Image 1 (cartoon, rainbow over the protein chains, first blue to last red):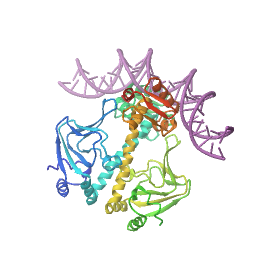
Image 2 (image 1 turned 30 degrees about the vertical axis):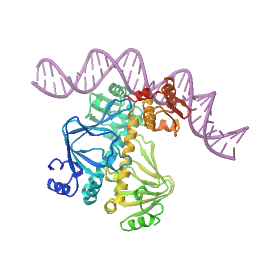
Image 3 (image 1 turned 90 degrees about the vertical axis):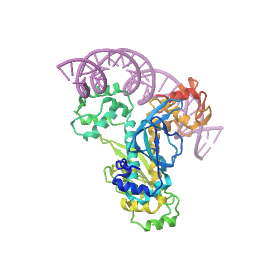
Image 4 (image 1 turned 180 degrees about the vertical axis):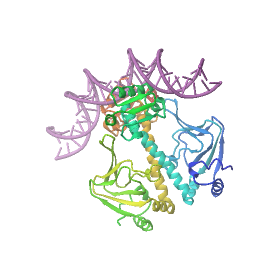
Amino acid sequence: MDCSLLVSAPLFSGYGEKEIEKILSGINHRLRRFRSGSLIAMNGEKVNSLRLVISGITKGEMVDFSGRIIKIEEIPAPGALAAAFIFGKKNNFPVNVIAMTDVEILIIEKEEFLKLLIRHERILVNFLEMISTRSQFLSEKIKFLSFKTIKGKLAQYFLQRTGNKSSSFVLDVTQNDLADYFGVARPSIARALGEMEKDGIITARGRYITIKDGEKLSMLTAE
Amino acid sequence: MDCSLLVSAPLFSGYGEKEIEKILSGINHRLRRFRSGSLIAMNGEKVNSLRLVISGITKGEMVDFSGRIIKIEEIPAPGALAAAFIFGKKNNFPVNVIAMTDVEILIIEKEEFLKLLIRHERILVNFLEMISTRSQFLSEKIKFLSFKTIKGKLAQYFLQRTGNKSSSFVLDVTQNDLADYFGVARPSIARALGEMEKDGIITARGRYITIKDGEKLSMLTAE
DNA sequence: ATGTAATTGTAACAAATGTTACAATTTGCC
DNA sequence: GGCAAATTGTAACATTTGTTACAATTACAT
């Protein structure tokens, strides 16, 4: 098996190609190939193995109760599928996983994977970091979703960059990206920015943002 | 040290009191006591150890940019403080942790904790389950926050119980609980229920809910 | 530089939700 | 049973956000 693609996988971070080859030779694993468009895992299916995307791009799709398909997430190589579901209390895929391109998946059964974790401290730490960091990402996202007003979300977003002092910066994302991330409509972002400018809190020239009144901006994060 | 309180800790699930005692004797650890009201950990402080709440109740508080204090979460014994921050990419406490009662905290440094994980497979699996399950909980929460309408959240909530078929059930939470969980105002919950009843989708007599039209209910989860 | 696509600004109107207040009902307790 | 507290139902009105549409501006490729 070709391990050159695995050196960039977070799980094997810190190992060289030869080492990975040796490590894998010590445990059971298998490689499966999926044609573009085919089903890699089905919603509800038991998760009792680690599945690493070696090459290609996968996506998770939810089928809601009315039969509509909603794309949840894209997981390109080198990523792991449903890593939190191997050891979590719920052990079923929460989504359908579909190959968006031709895809190679490395599969290691849970028991074998445990051996790997115990034998190789570095892999253990890598895996702990992967699922912990995911958790942190989700927490962060919830923080933004919890701000009830759009101005509140924007204020939080700006203040995270600058740390409460007046300053200028350039947004590195489009209003559309922000709208998606916050779960709101794009024109609402533009309107909120406009009102914040009218209130003397910021100036916004395209993506160039200047904080004029850090105090007032902070107030918006209240509630 | 008294290990009787640890047998109910998720991390030591499956071990008896004597075993836990023996396990702990093999690694460095320490116990700290905090008076009610005192600061256990400060926002920004490095997280380089596992901290288990042995007895008492702690809370996490965020100080927002305008200086207001927001209570984030209560962690009673037997729970872990900031478990996702030991191995995650960010290694700083995201909140101030305060003792709400007199509290005992068991502290195990990261390196020692790693030894524990490697030596005792059961503890490893327990810890993986803890942080994975937390991740699942956060995902679930995001799902609800992502439904833009309150009726959508309610529909999702109901359908999760019943699985799309007409049926009756009794809510085990108050409207207030639901409102908090969804991040909306309480009267809005009541109004949404009223409108869903008016539309012939459900009947709601207090907490007794009957799904009259599973199709229409499913439709509400769209968008 | 020039044309096309992407992004941003703006407006009018609709829809959803928040806020506040209070009445009706239920629950738990004695 | 009867009381107090908690919960639920409801209404009027304010506020926020969504929706749709289009103009203005910017970014990008050729």
